[in-house]
Length: 338
Image (cartoon, rainbow, N blue to C red; front, side, top):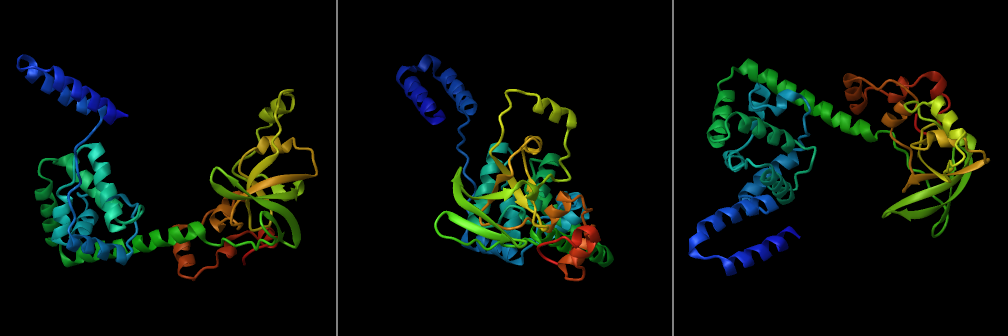
């Protein structure tokens, strides 16, 4: 729509403009282009050899590092990350734009062309470049090469400390990513077409597959006693009382839930309305294909303390069974895992 509007205005001014106010029209049109938000910026082209250099980074599988020192060009850790890059990539980063809209185009083009994904180390490089631009936006190329040189001047012992820190945070990042999905258990779905049934902890539940907002979901009919409230969403009894006395209250017929490792369904919304639900069975909605949530989510559902960073690494390395972190009175009731 913006482009159409600008095109109409451009045609109008081309037809009506004359030499006496041509300069003022030109100034006006430049401002108009800026106002309408159309940019003629094109991200710098990437040669095949440059793309191959980025592919090498991708193949190494470096994860995004959340530690602030790996996001700042002034820190030795930031300097170390830049020192890992060949000159061709440093030169490409030297063409990093300044305006926000152009930066978005630059990043999208780089990721789409190289296949580097979000949450990879490329995000650290973008943060480092942003920190350089804030300090000296006019001489990005000079600054980047200066930073690489400064890292090279560090002592061997200083470099070893930085490399060890980098390797540790890479391991921690991979371990945290693994922990996000650790312990998810697939549930076998029986049946034909949209009709199905499942067995969970020795009980059979009937249901169906439905398409909602473009997403495939599973709707199961379960006894109300199989539905629980998550620990992180306690009931507000004052609100519950107001809701109970509201004659215009609309009762929910279906409730979004997740499946815990204890075989119970935990409410994701409608916490208070479910407390007023009076029928013996209820329809619960889950994502398809059906599976339990991760142990990380289950810990939050049951108010179990999350493992420390060191424990997450131990879990990732197979040195710690995360089920050992679950209190005995909860662990003995588990239907999945362990």
